[in-house]
Amino acid sequence: MSRWRWLSCGYAALVAAGIGYFLWDVPVQVSDSYGNLVTASQGTLGSLVSSEFHQRAYLRPFLWGLIRVVLDLSRGHYFEWFRGWHIAQIGVLIVLFLRLVRPSTWSGAAAVPIGLAALIGMHTFAGTVQEAFPINTFMTVLICAFAAADLALGPHALWRDVAAAAIFVFAALTVESGLLIGVVFIAAYLVGARGVSRVGIGLQLSLIAAYFVLRFAILHVGSPGLEERPSGFGLSSLSPNELVARFGSNPLPFYAYNVVSSWLTVFLSEPRGGTWGFTRSLLRGEPSPAALVNVMASLLGSFVLGLYAWRRRSDWRARRFDRADQLVLIFIVVAAANGVLSYGYTKDVILSPAGAFFAVALAVASQHFLESIGTMPSRRAAAAIVMVAVLSTTWSFRAIGAHLGLRGSAAALRGEWAFVDLWLERKSQVPTDPFALALKRRLEDDAVRRHPLRPMLAGRWMQWFSE
Amino acid sequence: MNAVSRSTASAIAMAAPVAVGTLMIVTFSSLELLGHTPFAVGPFRNIAEAAGMGAASEVLRLLGNGEDPNRVLPIRGEIISSSVRQATALEAAIWSRRRELVELLDRRGAIVDAPTRQHLACLAGDLEALDIVEFLSPGRSQACVHGHALDVVLERTRTLEPTR
Image 1: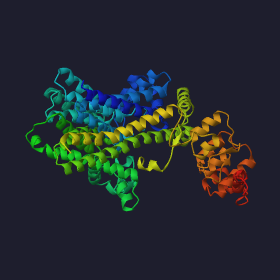
Image 2: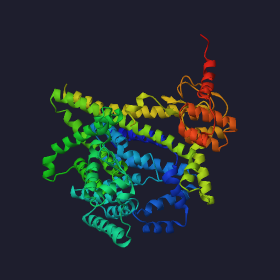
Image 3: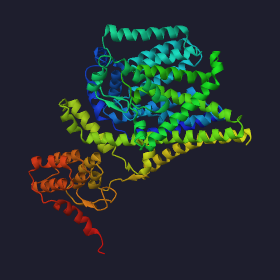
Image 4: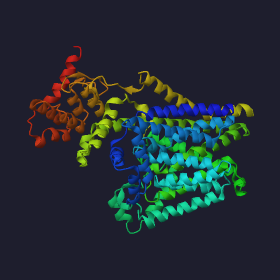
């Protein structure tokens, strides 16, 4: 391994340690986790998974299977196992990121920090770490997506076809975003990656078709309707009733809005969940400094990506793709597909696969940009260096903001545990089952006493990092 | 600038700001592990400070450790206000307008008698925390002298200050 790769690995280890430390502070949450754990504990693993094939609106049997496996392995040490699992996932994701970017030169190593900052600092990433159910399915899909790209970009072997099919089935039956794994394989094949063969791609297409047949024709799971939840639209948010009143007879404009919003948020960090919050605050003359930093970082990052695409356009037209081209083009296809998949409901975390590939693409495009600065005329080079410094600084702010977001989330989740009895009473879900009672006591004890609240960060400086 | 110095400068411009950010995170984490948390309020010195900041989980933990939510305790000026530096946890929770925290403490038996409840309801009324008034005194059944409860709490801090 070259010294640049060693340096990059060392740096990535520091990043993983930092985010791991902040993640270790986040307790298992009450909402979305406590109830799920109680549900996952019932019956056998087989009966749990098979029952999930007959739900309405969602088809996520392997999510439940995974929760059950970790629950059984934990033997009562829920916090340690579920949080440990989450941290291990972050570690695997960062390793896969390095495998994709493959820094082997000075420019590659210099671009790794910005790529990792984009991976962690991107707004679409927050939902993969700030909450869990208690296993974060979106993080699982990110790992599968990076693993898929890594498989596809390697040399061909039969086992890669088999592994590709296995990863797709696992991801697609974990959460709907898992369908993007098939998109990664197909996109990689279209840009010349042959790690997965033509037969393997045929298998992927068959599996995607089989998923839709299973979901809609056999199991009649369907998909969530407009009445499921509120959704951002324009400068504000619409309630389910407002959505039905406005788009009930013809939801196509709403779907189109969601798709376009999803694409834009990956490149601009605006709108968020369909709401143009930064624009609204700008119109009022009171933009949040952190939101301003976010939009600037994304704009500059997208500019570097656009510049890369412009410079490589003649090779792309001639269908000559090197590894960096392949990664950038996979990102573009995944972003497009991720947006389409968000037609019914757009939310930051749903776009986490597109956000993660944005980070990969930004790393390789930044490397290319750095290499080009050496050949620029002096004035242009000076301007480019200033731009690079601003790009790096803004992404640095976003990465720090992601850590602060975790700290804030940890405090909020502890607050939830303090009020757990009130919360359960209001939802008429007071546990009576001995396992549910013991689980509640243990998780509350973990959140309040065994891993108590850390000192709360405060100060005006935080407005530059947290929205 | 020649090509080499340009390349060096651009590599530093790209890597350094993010790397500094990462080092700050790692340094912060290390300091915290050693018991120092820079840029932080806290750790809370007692249950009243935790209540003043609305840190319900800390209130619960300190309650479990045997701290008395009815005991008047010193509170740093930055927690609630420089004019409120002596309060009970219940008063601090009201001052920070945390209705659910007041309810939580009540459920844990912290409001020990009717005079305490009346004092708290009156304090909530003086602070115009109407949801807390409604919780402590449904239908505003408690009779309060306007401003008296507030004055009781403020007076504690005033007596701490040196005479000019």
